[in-house]
Length: 185
Length: 140
Image (cartoon, rainbow over all chains, first blue to last red; front, side, top):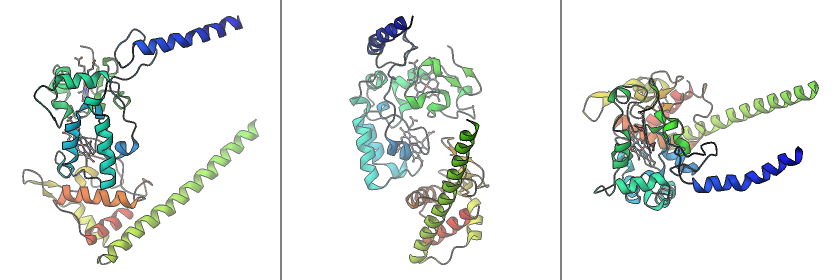
C-alpha cells in the first residue's frame, strides 16, 4: 500500500513537468487547469517598478506595450495623463531598463505577442486600452458596467475586474465585474 | 503544550510592542529632520493652521474650474482613507496616528510633495508651505 503510494508520487513528477511544458505560456482554459500554468503575460516581479509605477494605479505589466511606448512615456513623466509621475534619475534609468527589457516586442508570452500583432499603424501607443487586441477583447462590455459603474469607472483599471491581474492571469474564468458578478458571455 | 504556546504568545506580544515603539521613534526623527531642513532653507517655524485652511482651498483643474484641492484625493479627514480621483485606487490614511507607515521616509515625503503640489496648485510648494503641511499632517 505504502509502496504503491510512493510509486505513484514518483511517476507523477514527469507527468506534471510534461503538463506544464505542453501548456506553457497560457493562462487560458487548458485541459489541465488543475496544474497551474505560466501566465499569459509575464507578472511584475521588480519591487522598484511596483513601488513607483503601482502607487497611483495597478502596476501594468511591461509586456502590454512595445519598447517605444515605454520610452516615450518615461520621457514625459512630468505630464503623465494629467498627473506628475516623475521619479528620481537613478530610479528613472532602472525603471526604463526594466520596461524595455520586458516590453511586448521582447516577450514571448502569448498575450504580448497578440498585442504586437494587433498594433497596425500604432507604433508607440501610450495606453494599453487603445491597442487593437485590448479593444477587441473588451468591445462587448456595456458602458453601464464600466464608465457608469463607480467601482470600475474606466477600462484602465484592470484589477477591478480581473481578479488575478497581478499574477498576470487574465483568463475568462477569473473575471468578476463589481456589481455584476461573474462574466459569462 | 499549553505552557509553551503561551510562552510563544508572550514573545510575540513583547516583540510587536517593541517594534511599535521603535517605529514610533523612527517616524518622529525622520519628520523632524525634514522640518529642520525646511527651516535651514529659510522657512519660518511651521504653522499647521495655515495648512489646515489650504488643505481644502480649491484650485483650477484642466478646464479652468476651481475643483482641485488636497482633499480631492485624501478627503477632508486625514484619518480616513481616500482614493485617487482619476484612477480610483485606494489611498491609505495620511494621519500617522492611524497609519504608522506615514512620514517615515524623507524621499517619499519630498516625492509626493512635488507631485501633489504640482497637480493641486500647478506649481511646486515652497519650503514654508511644505513645512506647514508636514506639521499639520503630523498632528492628525
